[in-house]
Image 1: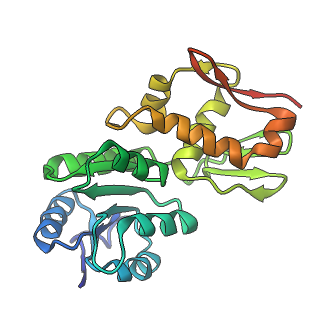
Image 2: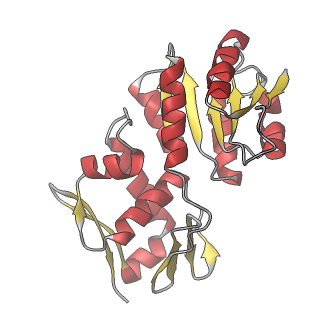
Image 3: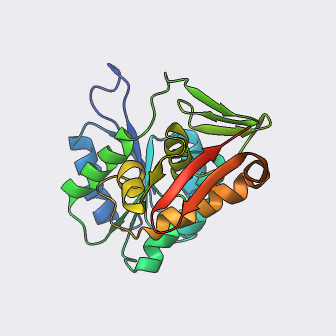
Length: 240
């Protein structure tokens, strides 16, 4: 089933669209009610096979994604969303082991909420993720040789070609690049990039750095890159 819910005032201003992917309809209706109370427009989907078609049609501002779905699991859906878009994704699932949370963040999820949940917490964490998204009006760009990092667009280019990074990896690279040569501890990076409400392991920082290094391998070899400072954390170095 696919169902959309519209706020009464959507014609008057830009409306935030939340895509709720949940096969338990009672849970979906609760989430829908809390989102509507916040003034958001919702699009609800319960079949994993239908998610991407609805996603591409609705262009939501954020996806609230269950993992265990009929037809197709949330992990594969998350992977495809990340291949196509930097739309924020919040995982909402009964799978609450550390490995499951790390799998979600490693796959590009912006947050991970375990069931059972409180509706107030879900909307608060959705709002926190949305608040961290960049303004489309920002156009600041940083250049380090062949590497161009566009803060406002949240995009990275190497030799003129866009580098495929998850939104969280991009945010981490931007944060480090804005403060070259400064050493950041894992806890500091978690606070600035993942947010104060992040409940996962600081291993997520290590995994993100590893992916960034792989994506920028040729540039790192010649110009610097993210350096590990033993016992302290990470630092971005660049030289031409």
